[in-house]
Amino acid sequence: MIWEVYLPIARHSVNILLLLGLGGGVGFFSGLFGVGGGFLMTPLLIMAGIPPTVAAASDSDQIVAAATSGAFAHYRMGNVDIKMGIILLGGTFAGGTVGVEIIKVLRGLGDADFFIKITYVVMLGIVGCFMLVESLQSLRKKPDESEIVDEPLKVPPYVRLGKALPWQMNFEKSEVSISPLMPFAVGGFVGTLAAIMGLGGGFIMVPLMFYLLRMPMHLVVGTNLFQEVFLCANVTVMQAATNHVVDLVLALTLLLASSVGAQFGARFSARLRAEQLRILLAIVVLLVMMKIFLGLILSPEFMLDVKGGL
Amino acid sequence: MPNGFRIMRWILVMLGALLLQGPFSLLHAVSIDLRVTPDPIQIGSFFSGAKLMVSAEVPKGAEVVIKVIGKVSEQELMRKGKRWDLWMNVGEVDVENAPGMYLAASSNPKSLLPPAADSSWGYEALAEKVSFKGRVKAVTSSELFREFVRLKEGQGLYGVYPGEVKLSPAGDDHDLAETSFWLPTRIAPGTYQVCLTAVGKGQTVQQQCLPLEVAMVGFPAFLSSLARDSEVLYGFFAVALAMATGLLTGVIFKKKRSLAEPPGGH
View 1: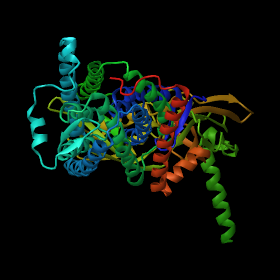
View 2: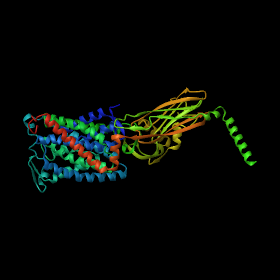
View 3: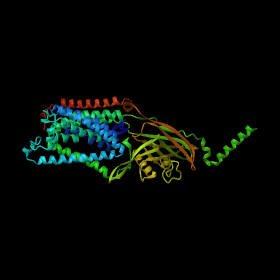
View 4: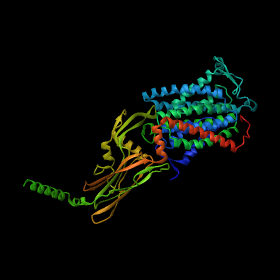
């Protein structure tokens, strides 16, 4: 069958229409929400029969394409704070190194897989519930109140902390004035979790940039995509060099579809209010969390599994 | 003459052996002539598995078992179990002496499946060779073997097909044995063995094996060797390709649609 495309690193064939559909759909979400889509794509690829290690590594490469495409679209619309993006990127690189060490220790103890799944469920659950509740509350406010949701009058403690830290810096694009230590720490936290979970970490980064760094939502989306381009490029090269699990045919098929999908997503995002975007993202995050949680409580089809999936 | 006695004794022993083997004794003369098509199996960009046709001429009246066997190697598996009411990997299991592929078909519908009268073929024979090592408590080897076979059958790499070898008359003293196997896309490149055994009264009458090559060709072969031999270059190539595709898509969309929307559409 001509529709079956052979993946030389995963070492089996998959229907090309399925891959194009997955890439296009996840790319659309990527452009819409400003997340790389790894938290969606990796579980979907595993469900399609791709070995987990190959799915995660190849997905990093397709995120580079989707994030480049999405970041470019957002940059043209003036939605990227490059100064903030570079500091966040520094944090994610530092955090990624810590996360890799944590995984090494956990693998030695034999509990890494369980820890990764539980981290997924907890992080996706917290982020999804928090965004859903907060966004619904914002929508219920009066129209004139919702207009000023990006700059609330009440100043939470973490914002005061950001202002109290040394080396205050003005981020003109984001219209915030905080210490660079704050975005560096946010990047470090997300980078650590992303390394543990094997993802770009956009679904954690987006809410943290919005709630902790107080960046406007449209800048959060573009800036996160900007830093994810470099973060995932680094992961792709590392995975190819050390584990040989980047499948270029898989990545190329996904990234062709996801790049197109990301363009449509970025344009569609301009038609939605910030609260509506966050509600949609929250629902997607919670659905993925439920899928992983069901995998933990329902009996598996096979009691044995190939180590590393290959 | 000692040499003459030796030759006579040798002829008598051979005649005796032929008589003891009964009706199958004279069937040695039939050449099996095992044929396998296609050979080699080529894994290209649009490989969707392959139908392997196997045929041979076998002694009339003999039962036939045909197997496709992959390379024997140690395989690392994870055993799932429940902890705190949650399913997770609870231990590593190393499988030893198990072939990467095991497909077997027979002419007799009753053979290959347990409890078989003859356990020389099928999963029963395989179970005697395969062993398991690892930190798995309260699980017997037979349970592990059952789960291992289920996993491999799910991947299309193991399978037994009793009665799937068709025998048809092809001459006075021989039949034509034919069967086919579906080789899944998960088949690993390498050398496989296709073996035919003709059985009479529980005894192996004739046996022949042929090597079967499975190899990647074209673009998959190029990428596979690049990823293995020039891994860093491969990584940068993957990233450059991804960035170029992302940017190209952006440019195409920019040209296609004039940016009517005001910047920062929120």
